[in-house]
Image 1: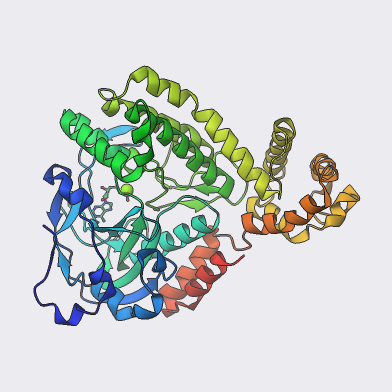
Image 2: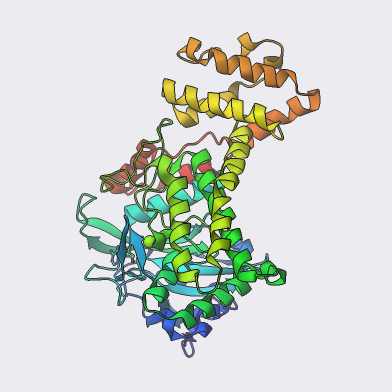
Length: 478
Ligand code: AMP
Ligand code: MG
């Protein structure tokens, strides 16, 4: 059992320890996790605290000190015995039965002010039975990168986990993909759920159909309570997961985001984006863009993401097949593309300031925009930021006013004519709303790799955290 240490006088005022933790997963029983302890670190320096999340947790940011963060999420004082969750997964196509939380655990679950259940999960908190000889740690650079990805995706409207805290822990780590030794950290993640497709795959592998049913009932209770009123709640759950996963893939594509490691252990059962390793935002519209240096066959390339997610949903039918009719699941999966395109089109239209356009017109604009982005290889984000920054109601008067400085000018002429034709069909009030919509959907700060590297250089060379703090501020701005 997770327990509060007896008489923790120095923690008694810590708001994180007074939260009402709900042992939802813990109460399901020990078949789903191992009880683990957090590592003790030589040092704890708070490098990031996400005050935006505290009100959702029912906490007043003013009442939460840095010391509270460090005690709770750097020293892990006041609570102990955490849950390393068990899961397997298909990694780059191959089934791996040796996975599980190898460097993290479920710290606790709480009901947020929106009435929903949320997880506090760690990354870099020490070894577990699933560490497979590795150190159970997170590099500071990895932590910094995940904080930034989550904040940027959240700003872009992607359903994502967020980082609640990042604490530097004073150890030296050795990694093949970073100059080593490199600095260490522990992160706490705020997410709807850490239950993965791979959580079910493991139970199927073990032939524990009783545990699959128990888990699915719980998942429906916690995250999909509305499907209980339907004729076949299990089938309705799968249908909704298909739709939400398709929408998530569309959100990544519109955001120009390449997750990079879409193994089934990184696919959430609530279709929330999480676990950001070697991710990248695309510099230009290039469907082959691949973010992970070890992804030799471009399996998880930017443009493959919708198809990979669909395939992962197909794989999930294996563990669910005793509970849900396979034909029903196939029928749901056959609607994946429709859900995907609907969402992708709406999001791309919104990036161009538009909403509720006739389908044929929307399709034509989408096709032409993507074609021109691909042919010109202009910066993907830069293009939309230009539309946002230069837009003026005068664009409706003449197409010659639209993106006058874009290069090569002629290549954008067909797009300019079509966009102008659409603007001409808008009423004055619709035209006025465009400015706000363009700003909401196209943040001016883009998290391209050089930007992240510059922030990391300042930390690495001068221990200067101001560029990082500044980047977080700019990411959040409108
Ligand atoms: P990821 O690629 O971060 O999703 O991790 C895949 C698997 O490897 C998960 O089971 C992780 O817990 C595990 N893992 C990754 N890095 C480490 C590490 N440094 N120590 C222990 N386990 C790790
Ligand atoms: Mg993972």
